[in-house]
Length: 461
Image 1 (cartoon, one colour):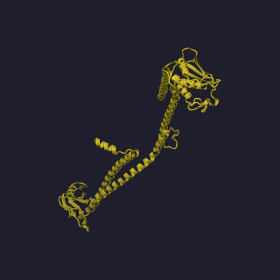
Image 2 (cartoon, one colour; image 1 turned 45 degrees about the vertical axis):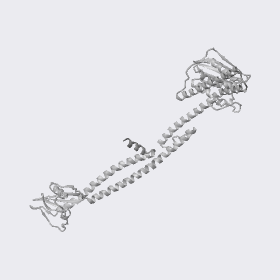
Image 3 (cartoon, helix red, strand yellow; image 1 turned 180 degrees about the horizontal axis):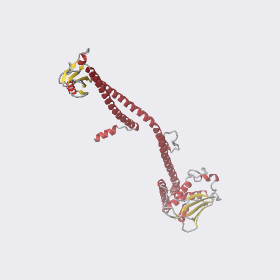
Image 4 (cartoon, helix red, strand yellow; image 1 turned 45 degrees about the horizontal axis):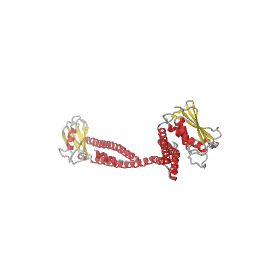
């Protein structure tokens, strides 16, 4: 049983066109089988009725030669006595008066004829004998005033059987032709119907690989293909979003990791420049270790944020005292010579409702830009606001060009790509995205002069 199932599964078509063609072929075969059986059964009965009608007509003709007006039944002579030679029996009650010359007593037709002659009304039956074709036998009573007779006629059904067999063979041949045509037409029709689906699948595969913005839409498509196109469009939109988030995460990671990697490279170059004392080596190792820890924190923070955004709106648990984080970031900030940094706070303790690592990732791009463009001073101030904590990062540099303010927080945009810095234009968009993920905001004050002023607003802890 298991082997038969395995064999059926192996022989089953693997394509939808093959399966639908097989289903159509099976359905058509069942329907044609039923129709063929019904048709041949009807034709058998029709041929039998034809034979019975012919026998009754012959019996009626023979009955005209039987005289039942007297007390005895008499068979009159006719100009054509051959009627008596064509399988005709004449009975007077149970007495056999005439029989076909070729009939042998005790043969199946003779026995059936005797049985039918004993019945009161007209009747028909089929006499079957081994090795011979069946014979149809019908009786017709001939009433009279004094005596009654019965005429029994017989007819060989071989010609009718031949006609029935010919009809059966013809119907089987027709069924085979119809099944072949059904299978071929079904394959052609299904293949033609599935051709747009195959084309749409190939296009969707190509578009998903490159994150294309092209879509199928619902116009000029049948209802089924329109629904398929809508589903594929939604899938392509999700794939494009995933690819965009992947590129964004990759860019943000490379952007954020650039600073600690630069510190590691600089420390190694400095340490290799000439032999160093043990104290200098330990100091270099401490800087490299701190940069490595910073890189791990950056990766954990950005990956956790990406994971939370993929599942649900991100909420970063925990609280952070803002002032120590600002002091630590400004100490590690690599400012050019002549640029001073200062931290100002209205209160010694200002708690924000974000994790320390996330707060660092929000503030780092703002502080890095401020130190990069400042002429003499970078000021970081923290204050309490209703239900929030505000942090201002101010520098006395040239500020943001007015024409670039609208594109300031768009990923990959820079005011001047030839300013000598290797930034990718991802720091400010990352800071705003992370702040908004926890219910905060990063904004730019275009009215501040001179220099630039960015404000970070975070929920109070």
